[in-house]
Length: 288
Image (tube, rainbow, N blue to C red):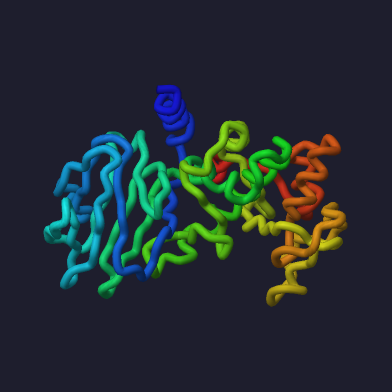
């Protein structure tokens, strides 16, 4: 009961106003196993017509079939007569499952050239609940979590549509941002998201892709040392991640360094100002 009440509370705190974001969970697979935490439904996403009522916590195997989709129920396959479905719960308040994990929002499953693409579509703030504990250990300092949240929110907004040709914005891996869904959430990291709601980093009134990495190995790098050009909001500084070998591209905020700074009493804003150059803080709603 406490879990359900917390879920509903976070739903109302974070769902509006917010960007929606689509996260690619699986791409190019032969099948996917999906489900819902409560009684829910599988709908034709082209028409929103409910095709199948789902039983709580029951697995449903989805496969591509002659340009459409088929679902396996109790050992038998049934054609769904559509190439794209939505797996959803009442008012999207509860959880949907894929990859043996629970997620907020809805799942979109599409037959794309004979293979499946599985996408988690949900509000940005709810997405971040599953990013922060996947990107940074939950036991780390709270202000480091808050800094990570603002950086991750900025990165996500700046990269909306990055992988649009595949039907989603970002992957759920470190190729974009690690994302563990609702299964990864913790109380402290959820609070870091709630307490920084809508806050992003900007440069010249534009949201920046606030690059970050695990550890710099001593000194963070200017973007031109790794990619094609230097970006004015990224600078080279002491990574503050002493004794940790380099992990990642070395550009932007060092996550280990952020945690060390938080342990020394730095606030999230101070951490971010340390790693990024001439940035401003803004709320997403003010930029619309």
